Image (cartoon, rainbow, N blue to C red):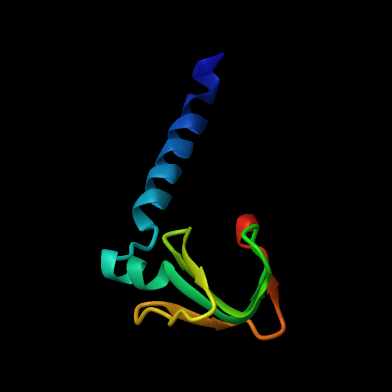
Length: 92
């Protein structure tokens, strides 16, 4: 039974190998710039008390790094204006 499927499996394996080698690659410098975000001017609801009305959340490598009212966006972060938005950091 496998003999009849062998050409198909070989072609599938070759296609997967071709796709894997042709995927775009990013350098670590590109990744670090892309992987840091700062959402500013948003209403932030945390479990630690009253909501922060105009706060900032810094997200680096998919993890929340900082939350607060008086935070500055890091220089390597992509800034996102959160005016008019409400954010629940525990859901990110």
